[in-house]
Picture 1: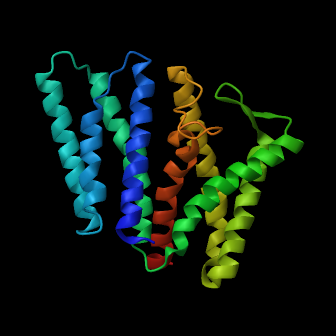
Picture 2 (picture 1 turned 180 degrees about the vertical axis):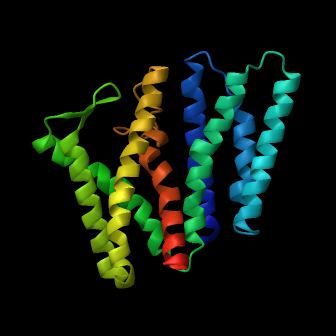
Length: 242
């Protein structure tokens, strides 16, 4: 549907993801300030389809930085780690996911699907490849179930999916889709590993329980968080400079 609908959807997902992120760190004696994080991303998504995206992003950053610095100045109980974690949550989750809204501003919504094809295609292909052929651990300290064979299978599978999607719907992009599939799959798996390392740091199994069998929003969108910016900047480079 695009338009304001995707902005509203992005805002809802970001708000839930931020809530899960901030709640996870409270278990580790770190107390972010959720209301500052929530309020700072409202202008980002709320103004995205009515004013220039860059202005909306700049306004949100300015509001966020000002509010955090003022809180740190006047709240004697607020530690620098609390302020830093509030800031990290906004950039890690909300600003990265906002790139899906920026992708929707392209002439074709074709590219929005690449974010999910690369992320979830990688997850699916890596899972089945690892299940049937996995022997060597990829990074046992962070994610004990992931294997090198699974990671390679994820890259190969995502690249095939990326190429096939373009071949059917946008043939002019199909050769550019090959490096996008390779790089996107690697970035997607890095996003998964980053989320896993954070969970181990705060000693939780899942970020939430909103999706039975999957955990929270961050458990399902961890790979998308890094894939969305990659797809956006890759498409901009391809369409403007290549």
